[in-house]
Length: 113
Image (cartoon, rainbow, N blue to C red; front, side, top):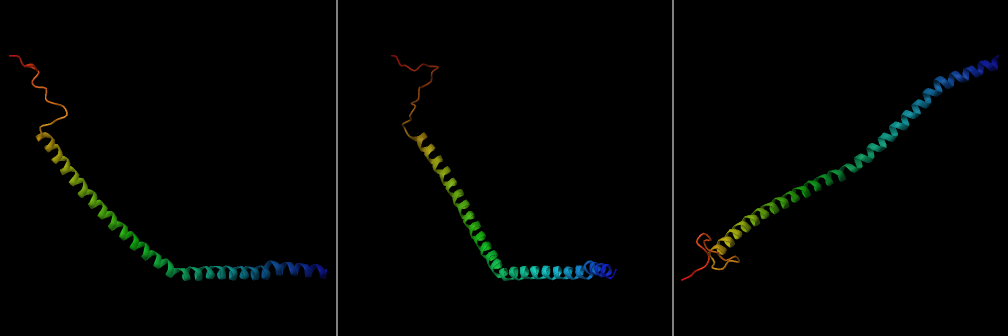
């Protein structure tokens, strides 16, 4: 009977105190894990902040380049349009045309006399 009571007592200890002791060990392991993770993140913080500032500077320079290129594109389009207008005016005023005038077809295209 004593053996039985000893076994029952061991089971109660395992269920109660041992379980809580293992739960406390688990809690400490979790705390250590997350503290190590926090230390790793804190050690990376300056690098990430420097990277963020570098990326911000790169983005600003790219935005500036994009703005300059857009302005250049607009200037080139405007100059191309004026050049095309000048060319069309020059073609109209020149004496030669690829398709010569055919005259007024209502009055005929031939002369006789």
